[in-house]
Image 1 (cartoon, each protein chain N blue to C red):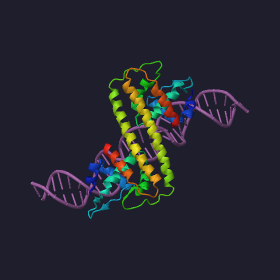
Image 2 (image 1 turned 90 degrees about the vertical axis):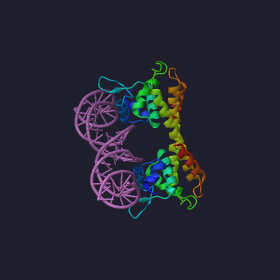
Image 3 (image 1 turned 45 degrees about the vertical axis):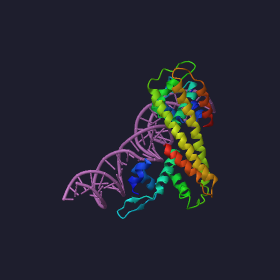
Length: 133
Length: 133
DNA sequence: CTAAGGGTTGACGTTGACGTGAGGGTCAAG
DNA sequence: CTTGACCCTCACGTCAACGTCAACCCTTAG
């Protein structure tokens, strides 16, 4: 499939796809005319990339773990060595982010719900989240 | 309290505090010598800012909702008008972010745990998260 | 007096994931 | 054979939340 066929349904821009390739996240084949030729599996890969990017992972880390996620039916995990430790750190970062996101959501919920009443509970939640950060 | 007294325990840099002021998030008084003079309540406010920033809210939005969070014991919510709708949108964004973060964490967990076994369940989770995005 | 360690205001640099043209091939349709 | 819709490769622009450096002032300890 060409870049447009991949971009449209994925909701990701062509520019982003070229950027992903530039960063080593995708390596589409090339047609004789130079056009990029993506396999069907690229759709899934792009979704993986999007999720990991949204989780705050950089393209370089994603480039490292993408091989471990590729073609699960065919290939085995290529034994990522000490990379695992880095992933643990990333995992912790994500967990912390989730906590802060939830705390922020509580604040917003309080603001939305109690549009003209005071709210002390949300501030307590805030302290809890702040202490964990 | 001076800027250093606020920065140190809050874990936020002096530069950040000046930036917050520049963005209208903080308005410390000034000593005769020009030094910023923060009230004790600024500690709490800074934590609020940090949480909301970490939630992906911009400084402009935070500047709008901070008055609604200030001095809950003294002031009442100043009736934020249609701002509430924007907050609802932010809330939804946060919820979506949480979903994606959890999906990403599942991927990482699968990678960490099954360091040499395949993993199909995490890919299903990925599809679910990708569909909601 | 002087050095150390605060503070102040600019103002430019950074980082990451792209946006946005510029300038130019390719290809099926009319 | 030209129009229009794709594609390509540079390559600079953007945006946000600061980092960093410069050049300067204020204050306290020795």
